[in-house]
Image (cartoon, one colour):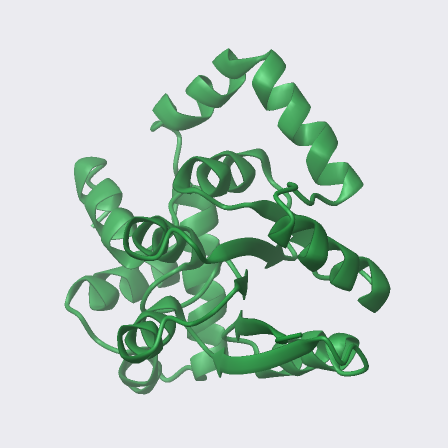
Length: 218
């Protein structure tokens, strides 16, 4: 019997290793790729897309998880995707499912339950953490709440530092270069960018820059 071939996509190496450790004792699984963003995964898949399932983070630099799922499902519809994230906010859930994700789990999930979710998903199921399932049902019952999430574009306020980071991000500069220019650590820059994404309700650099320009924030 052939092993289940997996990829772990997460820019936080500590969390990525923790996920791998949870699965290391399951002999039926074979982790083929561990990469730090969606772009790296897609590059690997271009060479060989013989993969069964991806455990995908959402908030990542270069190419975030939701956009990666959207591209993957167009190119490689046979590969299942489980979103594995610390975030359980309504908009992320809605966008991930809309992009084609096959399940949505919180990273705190224990190893056996994660293994069960993988096999359940490969069997055609839709694995979800309990809190995610509750939110998903609410989104289905009250779609107008999701619509209000999508159309709300007012009352966004960025700090001076966040605007400085976003302006440099708009110029195509890397986190490291931005950090050097603003005399910050790369991790502080990343935190500012996470806050910017959250405030603007976006999932990648392009969306953030476009929305900030529409609202004259930069």
